[in-house]
Image (cartoon, rainbow, N blue to C red):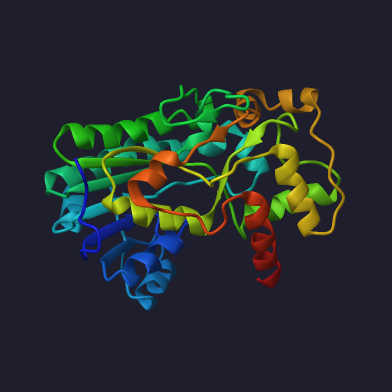
Amino acid sequence: MTSTSPGAPQRIFVTGATGAVGIHVVPLLLAQRHVVTAVGRTAEKRARLESIGARGVAFDAFDAAAARRSLEGQNAVINLATHMPDTTMQMLLPWRWRENDTVRREGSAALARAARDVGVSLFMQESFAPAYEDGGDQWIDEGWPQRPAPYNRTILDAERSAARFTEEGGEGIVLRFASFYGPDQFLRDAIGTVRKGWSPLPGAPRAYWSSIAHEDAATAVVALLSAPTGVYNVCDDAPVTRREWVGSLAASIGAKPPRSIPRLLSALGGKTTELLSRSQRMSNAKLKAATGWTPKWPTATEGLPAAVRELTRR
């Protein structure tokens, strides 16, 4: 089963439209002449979406009748909605993920249900790729076993929402994003940690860290509008080791290569840091074969310097 026809303008509904990836997805869709309805949580965000040519709307997936009215006539839904903790340190606190759990577990199910009820053809659901089992130096494809930590176990619920959408006759696509980077708070926190002489990434220096720039993630989302249904790793071409990733960041800010986080200190983070310490050498071969997509930055050692420059400019 395949989704929308390549090049044909569609009516597309985007949640998470002002997030790190959504803010790039919406202009790309508009450039392809799609008619975009984009969700903004505040009047200011909706106005920003309107200013670039989208229709900015408020949206409550838990109001079933209102959700169906909002989705009536749409060809596709791209669900990028999350509610992440504000800082890297807050990400280590389990209770800071509760709202994100609700968004992924209940919000995704409600949105997919409303989309099916009104005949939307395609439902795209964000997910988190680095929940795979440790793969050492092996390439990890979409069939590799998953083992989320308690803080992100609800990615399985979100993925099931897309699977049910397909089972009920629609076309569901799961976007398993690698770790994002870009001119954002995570990068700001990472730079601060490197300047103090420490790596911001838990795990062994030789363990792989798969990542994807915000802009490349966005172009992949748009490319997948015409892909077969299924699950796709959205990551760069050449994952690098943590030593290489952090070394590139350090070089970009003129700092010395930092020390790795001691294992004993990492262990204090429990199952969250255990997950984030796994070696994850992910493959994007399925995505590229299905769409012909190519990232602007094939590897983080190329993309990170550009992200640092943009963060500095801002």
